[in-house]
Figure 1 (cartoon, rainbow, N blue to C red):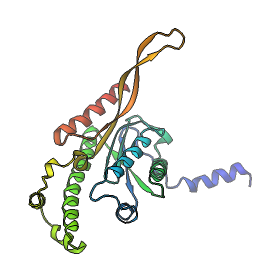
Figure 2 (figure 1 turned 45 degrees about the vertical axis):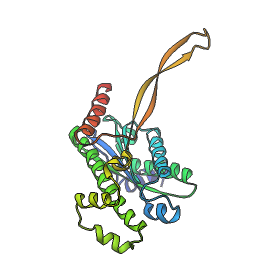
Figure 3 (figure 1 turned 180 degrees about the vertical axis):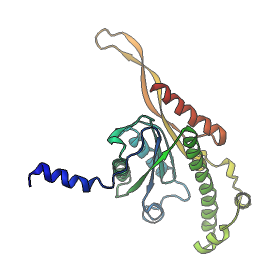
Figure 4 (figure 1 turned 30 degrees about the horizontal axis):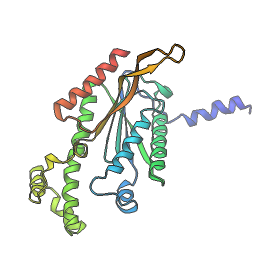
Length: 257
């Protein structure tokens, strides 16, 4: 059998499970650290419930994903999770799901591992969203998830540091509401509302333009030039205000198309 014939025959099997995202929908990639609970609490012994060094590694990893060949207009990270919103017209790899999943998971794993100094891996899933409203809903959902997890984590680790066992601390919080958990922290002198925003709301990133003074190497003339950089926001708004931020980013990107 000639190679061209064999190649055409085998490509059918290779591409049999290919899924392509439709061209007129928004794409979000969500990455999660694999086995990060054990990694952060047992192997590396990061500060619980939150550690600034770990946060900074996640921010650096997220920034790297925004600059690895895709048009990412907004990125969000909380805990060991990263969400990336692509430009509406992004068509890299023909929008094949397997290419986005494999490439982004590999990039994140490589960058984070280098920062950590040992192997760490991420998985990735693509989330198709039909319109801008659902994109806003998605990021508000992830932020609310971050807030609930942060409240629970602060309560759990407060109890653990008091000497309460894993089983008892877990049982103490199981089925309890937000008010109960806030009161539990407050009874120990911890005001949840005053804890760092990034712990409760996550960290957002997007590209921004800024003016920089430069010198023309030929004429020696000084002039202002417009550059781009990734803005990192550790004080994200919440609720409707956060939704407005997401909408403004989508609308701004839409005007560029």
